[in-house]
Image (cartoon, rainbow over all chains, first blue to last red; front, side, top):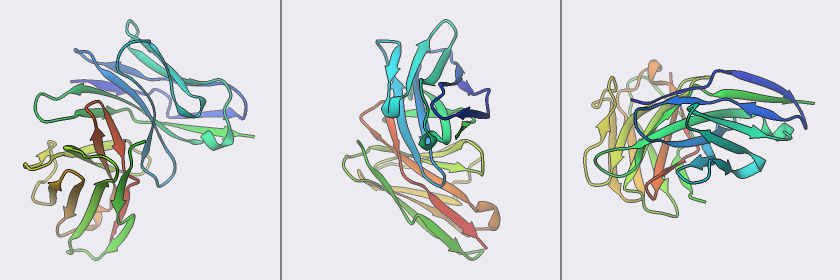
Length: 117
Length: 114
């Protein structure tokens, strides 16, 4: 089974400062990696994903993440945050299920990013 | 991008009644949909996998007789909470696969059972 660890439950940061949200995973097989963002009382929106290829992945809203296989990490970064980035961020991994279509996602516990003026 | 809708967005019901939540993929066909439950300030808990034309697969600890899932078409899955009780109050989110590697999520349904 796979698992995801997001060590930081809350990350406060000032506007226009850089931010890194940490994500580590464990799995005995190859995984797909995802970052989702959730605004209050809303569903999850896909920020970016790593399936294969280049380990540096760029997503929406200026976010990027780097897959590091040796460190089993997939940290999310943004060089300059905005007030509107305040939200909950979830890291997730998946492996392909054996039957049917689609992959089950395993989520981390989330990191609340709070951007302050 | 892929769009997934849920209806209703918010529902309040009395204890003992049943509530149906719809999940639709609006611009793509989804053979697989998932249903999640999210508690306040918590992560998403997978409840079940819904496959079009077959029975849903429930995660351990989820009562299949209480949470009825029907995936009647390639664009619609429904979750019915039967004989709802206050402890069933939660935020329910569905997702659908477009292709085989990425889930797209609905906006969620807030269920409050009085």
